[in-house]
Length: 346
Image (cartoon, rainbow, N blue to C red):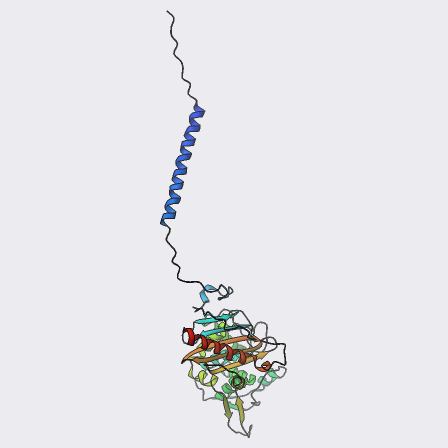
């Protein structure tokens, strides 16, 4: 009998390997799809509470740590103004209400004296003291085109008269006299001013002098100066100085008729219509590089607000507001703010 032959079954190892690879790939794909589905199903919903303010509201140049809280005002308070930078702050809370390039570094001109006077007041124990004006003050000012209040070399002046001369008349000799009295020199006093800015967390301010005389390294921002102003308004003497429209220096041997100090701010603002806002006080400034600058504050329905404007300029010398662009802007902005508050509230 012939033997029957058993057929040999050949196992295709390559085929099995391919099959295993395909199955493994399918398993991985299923797991991946399952994972993605679980992520989508567990993602929380985003609650929409309202539209966000314009991204231009806070300057990108300011670190997050120094950004103030802000309330967005849905109105263009700055349309058509002469100033290139502006910022409104709630004087009571420090909250910024609106701004136009308000965090940019600019030249502050004589509104620098807001910081000068504040730092001096914080470093003088006896405001009834006097200071004798030294010759180095007038040597320093000889080649500078700066405003003076009228005090003379070797004249002994009560400190409060120097403060009024600095605030109302923007007297450069008053600032230097105060600096010498407090710190021994202007440079030493400027160090105190920069230390004060640092203590307030202000990143866009650096002072090189007490008067606001132009220097490329002497700069601030509307926001920083608003913080200085708010700090100053908490000081009773500072508040008295900045809200005074007129001060008379008594007669003396040096000044037989005395000296009259009229606030440049109140002189200019009297021409403007501020609507329902009550203009309380301010400090003006000007250099050709800075334009017209102003730090001011007003009351609306008994609540105080600070406004800082920098860089007011116009090439039209026939403009009736040519010599008071800063106060014209301030009156207009405060008027618009008052209208907004009375219509919408804050």
